[in-house]
Every structure is written in C-alpha cells, then in structure tokens.
Length: 463
Image (tube, rainbow, N blue to C red):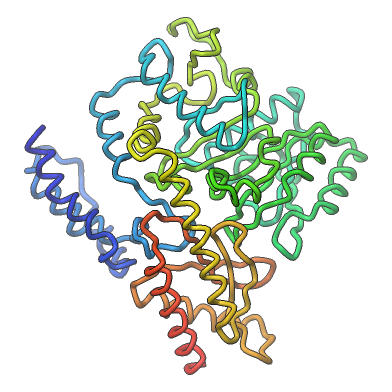
C-alpha cells in the first residue's frame, strides 16, 4: 500500500502543483487515443509504475484542464485537494453510511454537513437533505418529492413550470419523474433572462382553468447561460397561491449566499420547498459533489422510505438519520467527508472570502468589457457569470455576428491561457465568462481579457 501511495504521490503532487502551467485544452487526437485504449479485461496484473505512466502521461492530459485558474467555461469545479484526501480515507476504510446503525459517527459528520448547507440557504429547524452525485440527481429527487407531496397517485394532470433559461436537467427530471412531456412548460424569460412572472402566472391560471394542477415551479438562482437569478420572492408568492412546490436550482449560484452581496441577490431562496446546491461548483470541490436541501425533511422520508425485511430498524429520533430513507440510494460511500474535511481544515471564512473575490473579478471583467469597442455586454453579472458578444457597428445579420464571435472564442482558447465557452440565448449567440475557481486570480482574468482584445482584433481583421 505504501509503495502504491508513494508512486501515485510522485505523479499526483507535481500534476496538481503545475495545473495552472498546463495547457487549457488538449483534445486533438482524442478519438485516436480513445481507440488505442480499447482493450480486453487483463488476465494478469501490471506494474504500478507503467499503469500510472499511462494515466498521467497519456490519458489525463487529453482533456479540458477544468481545474485550472484559466478555466472560465461552463461552470468550473476547483477540485480542492483536501476533498481528494477525504475520499481516499472514505474509500480505503470503506464504511457504509446508507443507514445510521452501520456508522453512527460518519453519518453524524455527514448530517453536520447537510445542516451547514441548510443554513447557507436560510433553512432552520426541521430542514434536511442528502448529498448527491451532482445537481441533476438533486433536482430529480426534488421533482419526485414534489410530485408525491403535491399530487395524487394519478398525477398525470400535474404541470411543471420553469424558465426557458432553466438547466436542461429540470426537463429531464420532470420526464424521469413521470410528468407528461406536454405538461412541462418552458416559460418565456424577460430582457434580463429571468422568468417572466406575468407569463408564468397566465400559464398557471390557464392550466388550472383547463382542469390541470400546477404542481412544481422551478426557479433558477444563477442560470448556466447568463447567470440570471429569477425573482425568488415573487415566485414564492405565486407558487404558494397555487399550492405548488417551489424548487430553486441554485447548483451554480447557491453558495454565494455565504456572502453579503450573494444573500442580497438570492433573497427569497429560504422560502423554497427545496434547493439544489453543487459543492463541486461554489465550494470548489471535486466533480461528483451535489446536494439537495429541503425545508421539511419529512417530505423526503415520506417520498423515499421503503421497508425491507433484511434491513435494520430505521431511526425515529430527529437527531439520527438513515440516508437510505431520504433518497433513491441504498448503497453509498461516506460521501460527507469530502465536504466536511475541507471545511474543517480551511474554515467557512476562507470559502466566503474566495466567493467574494469571484464576485469582484466578475465585476472587473464587466467593467473592462464596457470599454472595449463593439462589445455588447448582454448579461451583467448578478453573481460571477456574465455573457457578451462582439457586435460591429452597422451589422445586424445574426449569422454574421455569430460567425464573428465564434472566431473570437476560438482565438481566445487557442492562446491556452483561458478557456471560455459560448451559448445561444434568446436567439443570440453569446460568449460566456464564469469565474468560479479558487485558482482564478486577477492576473489570470487580466490575461484572459488581453487575449480577448487580441482575438477581437484578429477576427475583425480577417472578417
């Protein structure tokens, strides 16, 4: 074991230490590599050094460098090293946490984590939740819970509502939960890419008049496209008026509630029935770390608790939790350690200060972009994500504008100091900047802006 750990550390520590010096992307030849890696199940074992050499020299480099400070694409995940150590401990000791009886201490630590995250969104006594593999699974659990809590067993008259800017996992969750495709409404958004409250109200009234039941309203607290935050207090009022469950997808934006500015932007989130959070986004943890928190923990138990003759007695004390009764999972690792250990080692203050820095950096990017000729800042940063496009004076053809911006994006990414992505939003193709890695500094952001200016000049010259 020690030899294997030493061999892995000899590769792993330099790899992590040099993340910011590594290329932002190395995808050329990926198909050829993938074909070369196809192999039958090995009959005999191989030496660790050769296997690690394959991983670190060939397999891992052929990817997007999503842990880099220059990665401002999609929604970054920082991959804090302390979480990796926590996973090593959890997986090597291999304790089971699906039921409280099997590992009371580890379950208590994970319960602490869930309670801390409930506090982040403003939930109090009676709240609870589960750690998941990510936001998609959290949203699915919330959707099934909403269906069970708000609709009868014959639930096909139930309707789900979300903005046309909502993450695609919302629609997927509704379909997997059994809602009819024609009963999943994509409500139009306003000029700020927030759900249009009047359009939503009309849709809910129209459905009710037709004998349908408004069951679930999904709000976004930081959309993937533009970082928009839906009007949460008004949505809470509207959902309550119709007896609908309110779920907030705060996978990207929720942890900004740890900051004063974030709490102001997310005002009303505490009124939601459930909230999706992704610690692998706003807490800078490794991918695969999601969370669902609910205002009434009993709703999760009423939805997911199923008895088995081979199972030990389940807990009835509110201070003890059987996680198997709160989600679809029975088998699960000690998932809480990957959140608990970083918080214990670094403290919440370090995360709060880092999140505040990301808010500052996003506003710095916006301020600089306002001064770049022909750049249209389409979506101001409500949190740490913004969207813009280059729109030359006198050019109105959207296809030409999109082609120009795609060239700009390729020009930035080709310089290998930053990696950005684009998206379509309300008929316009936009370039996105999402600042959410603990490794992203002012110097890295300024390098990206320098590369952006140069790429704009090149694209305009070649147009």
